[in-house]
Image (cartoon, helix red, strand yellow):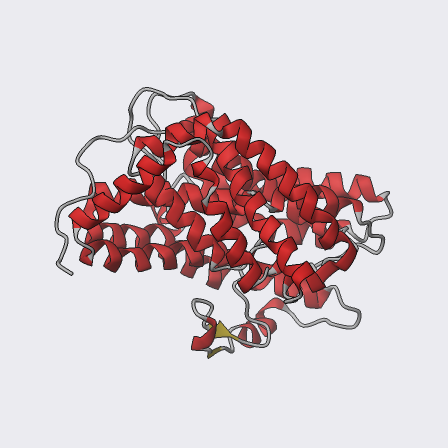
Length: 403
């Protein structure tokens, strides 16, 4: 293979504001999702209410199949544009700054909070936060769990697994782009784009996702998917951004994708409801078939959402990955929210767990507590972002925003 020196594209790409809106919707939705885990009877969340229900997970499960996969696909789209603009070296540096810096900062400053509150919620545990910190950061390396190589009794990547995977995928992409001949990459993309012109062909990657889910299994701690299956969504977004025919195919087949997603989800969901956690890793034909349907449903739903919400707009510069965004000419609300996605994501889980730690002790109906956790968490998260993050160069840098 020969070194690749030219950028992927020299054209000025179109900014798709719908993608920024989808990212913001998913991140805000995570506040509702993680708040519901406080009251879910089947989850092992950091803080749990005394009274629980199975209803919350039914509604939350409807989003698990598409929400995080959608974020990774959008990140792949942004990665293509960022590589085209900066080249491999510039892209790697930009990802390290926009993702690596907030990953390290949040790991040190915020990640221990949920684990400490988990312990404090247990009867008889009175260890202070500062006494807990040395134990949390007592770690060792396990390379077999790459990229989650840091392991410890209390240490965890928590909700930052998403940021770590995004950074990992981006850095894995750099040598591939650098060493694959440009002519070969263009030819492969041309063949795939020509295939996408056929009705329904855009759904074929769902079979690959289904096979990956069947063979790798499903991991609850990573958003209801095996963490390496997200690489397929990321790669799909990267490839799709390279040729407008993929985008046209998603718009054309959006309704077909929606039908395929709903049918495959309804066909496979009863197996998970009946068999529970055994479906996540069992290698029986029944479990394998259910996970295939799960993967097909996830891909189909993502294609449907992308296609149904896609409305061509005037060309402006795109968002690189979900870690940064600098809209121009949009509404004030859009200009405020678009750059906030990564900071809001980094902030959301420690805030939700902290609020829930106090609310679960109140003598109120479950539904009222859930509403309080959601509304109070949203208010605190946005207040922290507005007051403590976006107004100074230092904090913007630490949270992966443009300075």
